[in-house]
Length: 327
Image 1 (cartoon, rainbow, N blue to C red):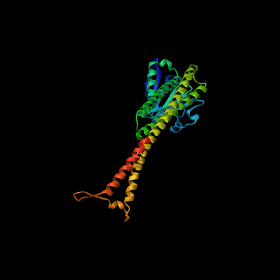
Image 2 (image 1 turned 45 degrees about the vertical axis):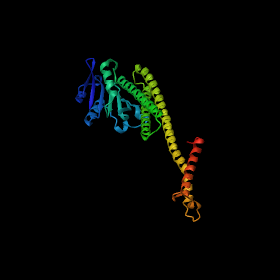
Image 3 (image 1 turned 30 degrees about the horizontal axis):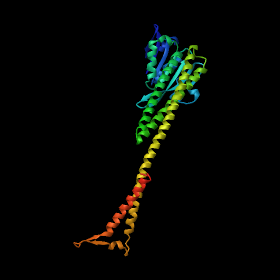
Image 4 (image 1 turned 90 degrees about the horizontal axis):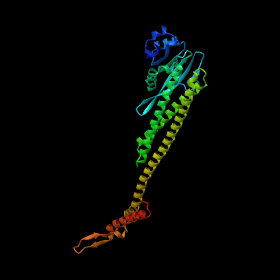
């Protein structure tokens, strides 16, 4: 899909007909926005702009020259845009080309809030976007604002997770999975903001942009630096939360091991006594201990003695543990 923004009748007009390239010149076009363009649309734009569009592989490269470069005919910049998908994000690379005549060309693969918001601003105050340079800077400004919103969203999720962990006595796997997911989102945010920083640094070194843009760039650089610091703080806080969660898990495991250890020690004397009386020796006096009642019945005193001895030893062990405050 292609959208052409025309400067006509003191306003911006949208059109999707590539045949306009045969009738109009550079002065009539402000912005050519392409989302998942067809081969025919790409060829039409390349013939009109007399430049080659970036391939998907070139857009996704991480070298500094791939993020911002200049040649005799145009300025080429590639940047990553976040597309929210539930609680996570998907990185969508976007390619920008600004011709020497000030026409902006954008190539993307997904819908984005940044482009919708920039289009609204363009329609509301078209006089502020006299060239593609101004429009490109506006796109970056809107993108930085949305980056700030996402950094704040992640910070709120981290704070909520920290509060939940502090109020719970037990930690399950879901909490660790959530911590890992937030760490991944924070790292993606930092990489995305660093990407924006590299593009802005390239623009600051350029001499092709209008002079009224550079003061705005200084403010954008400050905003980006503050976002990096905020993202770093969130990542460090997640490390602390992860350590706290692992500490709680270790404490819980130690309590379980302690219960089994105490139970084993409590029943150890009884097991020892039972093992002694379980030996099949001929000489075992307790077997002969009996108590004859007046009615002639006999009570096996040795058996009762062994049972009471086991109960006494187990009880004595429990008392000793409580006395030493081990229980």
